[in-house]
Image 1 (tube, rainbow, N blue to C red):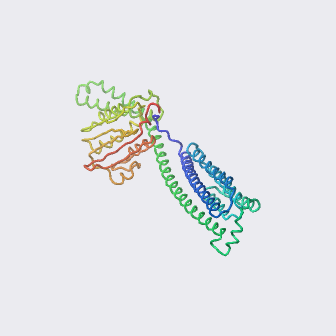
Image 2: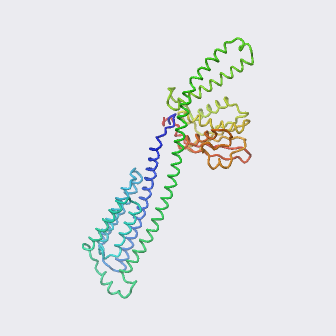
Length: 446
């Protein structure tokens, strides 16, 4: 993990998010086509068994079983490509539908052509194309299925016994083989269409919800980028006055009147200490934004990194009591990160502001995740913050600019695959739980 949070230009990022959502939608649609193809395989096998063995109508079994074998092979290949290929384009769905049309045409050719009542299953392919594909691809499916229908009126393998059976049972109405076939085809197409379109609508709703979430994330990252630019500019501008103050304070330190006055001397030391802290903060901002050169990121273990970070914070903020427990099962090597250290400091700062007399920190490991729980004994979070933690400028503090700390925490953790949860403690106070995969900070990821 780099020490800076890289943010792509917002418009390009949003376009990439839309492409990702569209690709995910196509992947789910391909999976639905695979399910339908399995249903078609089972349905064709059942139909062949009934027609050939129950009604005694001779069918070209070897050829029809070859077509079924082709569909099974196509499904296996499709499942493999879906698991290992990055191709999630609409063209893949288009090709799958064309292959389904080809398989249906082959089966109809072997079983009576256009006289087969299942010829109307072409409409199923057309409707699926209209739902899943762009206009040009849908019209291509229409043209292909229409051409196949016309061809099947002239070229097909007749089925012996079918027409005689139809004439013999003509008076039977619904018991006529052809009418029965038409009814079964209608029922099958209706059931499959209702099921498929309901699943498509569910996928569309899920995609819309995902796009809304991604748009919100893009907006937050745009906000972070602007904050980073403002912070970087402010750090540059603060460099000169801080250097000037350092020189002035050094001169004052040499004045006998100040050196001989214990109170003034102590005050001067405190001002110099705070000035040094301000310079460290400015240097950290410039280093994190890549505008200053520093030493390579420090390599240490996750336990030592957390121990050092929390110890330094405790010396700087001096809470009444800092209760710290490190229960990590394994102390893995990582590359310590300035942004991550500042993020943890934001959470601790919020805790000590809410509860100056006591702050509790507990570190645990759950699988590959590190879980850091920061407790305080303050007034707790208002309900609006519990449901929307990380919303910028949403804070219980009554001052301008509040709420950015948790906003940055949520986004930094999300960037490395982590999460942030805020809860109120039953005994009073609040807990902020940070969870992240330690692999995001490991030495190999540097």
